[in-house]
Length: 294
Image (cartoon, rainbow, N blue to C red; front, side):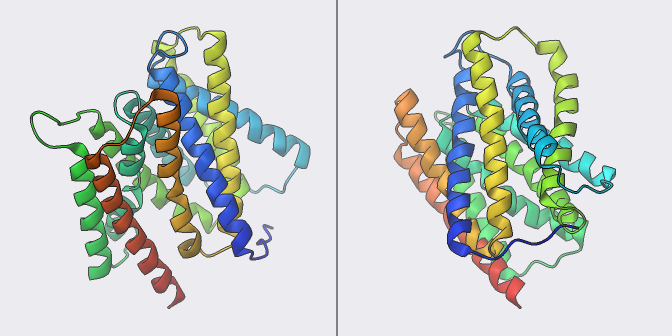
């Protein structure tokens, strides 16, 4: 049986903060692979395949060594979670090849908002005025980042918006799985199934990567495995309402990495849109924390 971790808010915050640095790192490598920085640009499906392949190698190695207790998986929920997770990762990797990483990351923060809306018909949850208000604020921020004018509209931002939508659906499946299986088993099964889906999808577009691209693909997978391990352990050591704000540090790291590697400086529109999305997401996290305590 899975034994809950001892609560340690300080360690939880450090783990979540570290996870955000790893997640932003995977996005940086995906941008380098998708823009031809390390050789001929790779298709987003091939980048996604590398993410699942090397993450599965990392997690599978840990399983082989540590031999944690496993139980029979709920295959239906795992299939749903992995399908939406793979779709979200692929869309996210595609978006950062065309728009600033900070913009794509900020738009991806809409996934808890979409999850809240989807929870109404799928989980039978009730949504009050505070939640709706936070969702409207966050969506308004995303509209700003889309730059909906003929001269500044970013079609690629719709890829990030699609990623947020399908990852919101993934959160619904994660919520159902978390009450049935241990976090470690969820990660193992997710990456194994994700690798199977990604392998089938990549065949029509696969091309031989360069040595640098192989290293970057391995980096994407291993950094994601590290991020997942930090995130799962952080969530296990403190309330979700406490650790949620620390996850938004991904935006800081994404902007920093984009500036260091590609000389991309966020403009005023990016800063305003990101700030509005963060405001809505933080209000939603605060409200969820109060709701959970009641």
